[in-house]
Image: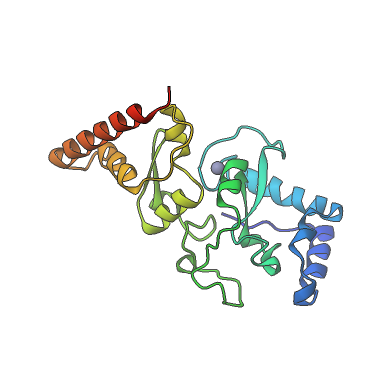
Length: 215
Ligand SMILES: [Zn+2]
């Protein structure tokens, strides 16, 4: 993914923020009206760059409407305001993914001073430094993590929510056992016996949930 290249007026604003003393770098500045143009430039760039797909759930949102999209800080701006305008710390995400991820730490070493620019310095799949398809696979609305980073992303962004919504279950906490069974069921490479065990396990889980349902 190509990082955003700021136009001259935005770059001047970013430069002046980056030149501030560390204690003067307040992440709340992001919402300052004087930053409107920068935020718009960031969103426009990444919405187009990502082909209108959220950087985390990979869903297509066929609109450029900025109310639908969030300018996403991969390292939360509250945790690292000094990386707030770093182009490789920015992407476009849907509101649900952004809200789910919140201010969770995604760096392996949060004490590192320089901007982490390598895949292995992040615990989640990184929109700039990782290939999404190496870490996450979607079977329709059912997600299957293919790596530890993929698993972390599924958990932090609640990517299981699409399958859960389809199943008509309002709220379902992440359940690694169930997620694993779904993954096996959906895996064309899984051997038949393993698959049969997963299917029976999942049936038992669904029966149990149905009995617990209030109505
Ligand atoms: Zn999303």
